[in-house]
Each structure stands twice: as structure tokens, then as C-alpha cells.
Amino acid sequence: MLHSNEKYSIKQWSEDDRPREKLLNKGRNSLTDAELLAILIGSGNRNESAVDLCKRILRDHNNKLSEISRLNVEQLQKYKGIGEAKAISIIAALEIGKRRRLEEALNLDKIKSSRDIFELMHPVLADLAHEEFWILMLNNSNKVIGKHNLSKGGITGTVVDSRLVFKKAIEKGAVALIMVHNHPSGALYPSNADIQLTKSLKSAGEILQIRILDHIIITQQSYYSFADEGNVI
Image (cartoon, rainbow, N blue to C red):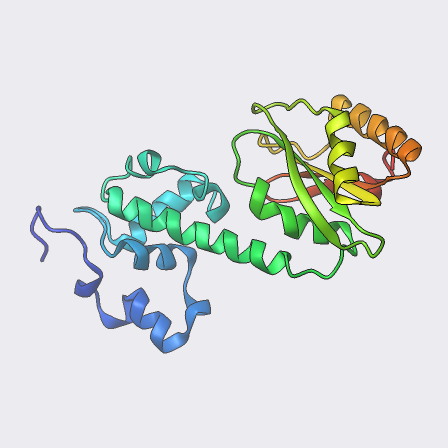
């Protein structure tokens, strides 16, 4: 029996309930998200096991690791049983996962679809609490030869200078551009401002003979492609 000043430590569980042993015996894919997080924190609090605590954290964030990855140390420490060291472990582990995805996406030989753009930029933009506008610069083979963050804004918008868009493209010798920005609000569809900006840049690109191939809006879970939807592009 646990005394009131003890924590529910993984070592005290039956072997079948221990996520570390479960990983060793059944493989990493057998573990739930809560069990994987529990391995990181090791113990819970006086009233909850590590797995139960992690289940509660997940429930509070729609059972999505992507939402937990947006939390900072102070926000995680609001959960009893999560101290600074445990919060840092969670943040570091989720950041490694994000960087792995970005590393894999950067190995793309060329952009073949809107999904390729999403895979490349989702790790960069999805977890931000503010809007950012990026351009991807491509050569004749549709290979990305550069990417640049043109602006950062607030929760609802950002300001883009079209002159800077094409200045960067010309400096890189790009023949085509893809525009990408995020919607932290989760709204998937373009605003009127998004549509007007796309029209403006497409017209300017035609004069400079730099094609605008697509404009992608990224949310935490999905994306919108102007090209796929036949909107302006």
C-alpha cells in the first residue's frame, strides 16, 4: 500500500503494466501515447500513476501530441507531478520528433504534390501560436533551392511585402515559387486577404517570369492548397 507522501512509481507496478517492459517485450508500436509519455516522466503524483497523469494531460489537449508540443515548461508544470525536469523531457522528446519529420522532408528530390509541401513545412509551422509567411524557391526541376521566412505576425495575420518575395527569388535564381503560411486559429480556408495576396503575387510573377505554383495554408492537422482547389492558381 502507498503512503500519502509516496508517488506512483513505474517500478511498483506489475511487470505487465510497466511501459518500459511492454516496449521491450512487445515493441514500441504496442505503447499508447500516454504510455510513451509515462516513460519520459517515470512517476506520477500521490493520486495518479505516470500513465494516468499522462492520460489526463492528453485528454485536456484533445488527445493530440501536436497540441501538447505547443505547451511550454510553465504550462506543463501546472499538472501536479510534472516538475521542471519532467516538463523539459517532454518538450525535448516532442521536438526531436518534429525535427526528424523535417529532416525526412528535406530529403525530397523535388516537389511533386501539395502533400510534399505540407510534409516539408508542417514541422516548421504547425505548432506556432502566431502566423508566419514563407516562400519556397524552386528550380526548373521543381527542386527546392531555398526557403525563406518573409514575415511573422500575430494570431490572425501577417504583413507580406511582395517586393521582398521576388527579391529573394531573383537572388536565388528561382524560376518558380510556392507560398506557405499557417493559421494558428485552425481555420483551414483562406481569408479574403489571403486570396488578394495570392492574386497580386501571381500577377507580379507573370511579369517577372517567375511562376507561382501554389499557396498552402497549414493548420495543426491539415492544409489547404490553392492549386488543388483551383483558387486563383
